[in-house]
Every structure is written in structure tokens, then in C-alpha cells.
Length: 87
Image: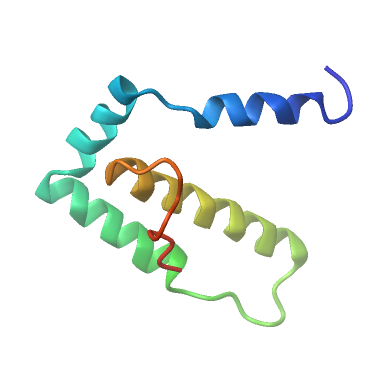
């Protein structure tokens, strides 16, 4: 792979089939799983970095934010991202 070739694999990776999504729902559909998601949302999505934060910290936080939102989407059974972006 070279250049932007790797990006084409990202779209294919987003196409999680129904059998794979069931695992997310079973894990995060429990009371304990919901508590974990709530804690991740509280500590990652609902907090902000200060104005003096370096670029690398902002990029890292955005990656964490994207991961938590994707986990929540899969846990709710949604892969298109519609309406669950709570940040």
C-alpha cells in the first residue's frame, strides 16, 4: 500500500456484519456495560482540554472521542452513526 490506498480498507472495516454487532450489544447492553460506556463518555466526551493544550493532546483526545462514540454506536446496534453522537 502507498499513499491513500489504506483509506479504502477503512470503509470495508466499517461494514460490520450483524453477527459481529451482536457481541457489542451483549457486552454493553448489560448494566455493567452501560456503566462502562457512561464512565467513558463522562471522562472523554464530556470533558474539554484547556486552550494551552498541545496539538498532539487534541489529536489524541479526538481519537479517544471517536472510539467511544463508535463503541456506543455498535452497542446500540447502529453502524451509520445517525443520531447517537452525543458529544
